Image (cartoon, rainbow, N blue to C red; front, top):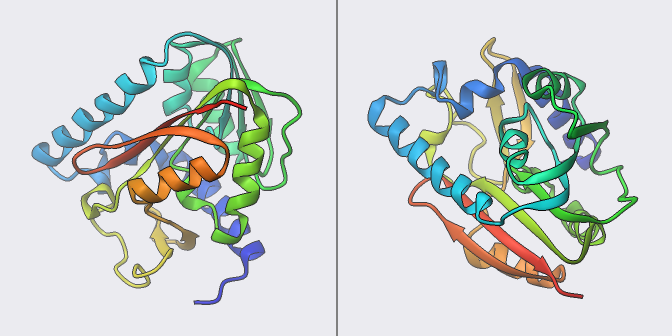
Length: 233
């Protein structure tokens, strides 16, 4: 499938702008994402596994959160950091994040991450459910930015999705789901095409090592893959 990357990025930004008011329904298993008690309990148990791994980093000073979204993980980062710089391409999600957290420890940049260039180094660079949306032809450039934004001896922490159909909405479109470009639908029925790449642990490990990090990659039983990395040089 041939895809215009510029158009794809534009569509992804529009998708998350349009989805901003319902994004938390996915995380908290509400409405179309409610798969019943058994699946929901499994989801939240695995969320706790990843949250615990993030907390085990311990206290850090300056954090950069890329694709910060509605603040689900910004809230977790507040527990371990002194200051957070949060970047997102959607003004709508930034507004939700700000209103939800109302913290003077967090500053925000409204910016397309593919245009953004790091201007300083951070003790921790964090992004959740974002790497899977980076088109293949922009992956190396993005990881180079992550490397430049991480101070020597600094850390990265990544969270993303495993390919389990029960993580998606019950009425998730079944067409066009065979490759890395997928159709996603909002509550109002509007559809968007996005990139969604489900990395295997060995693939993610190789990507991070090649980008200059030492990395520990883990998976939960069903839903999540995470990586804790260090920049040694």
